[in-house]
Image (cartoon, rainbow, N blue to C red; front, top):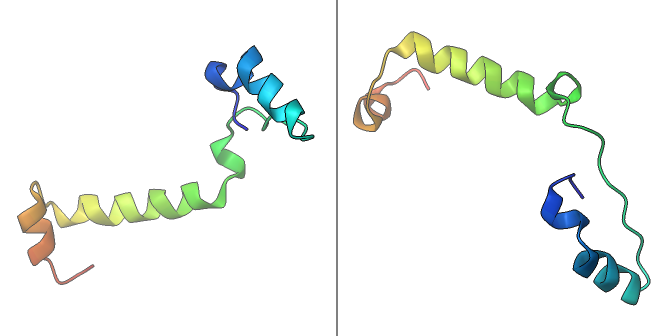
Length: 64
């Protein structure tokens, strides 16, 4: 689970333990270690070069 405060409450802990599971929290978010972040960065860079300000302009573009 992520470290969202709602996931750390007693109700979640009780329910998890009731089914015999164990809570394991993910490490703090680190985009440097997440490969998809590099993909999104490239994609956003390409979108910026197109200069489309609206969805309809973006949809008309042939470069994507």
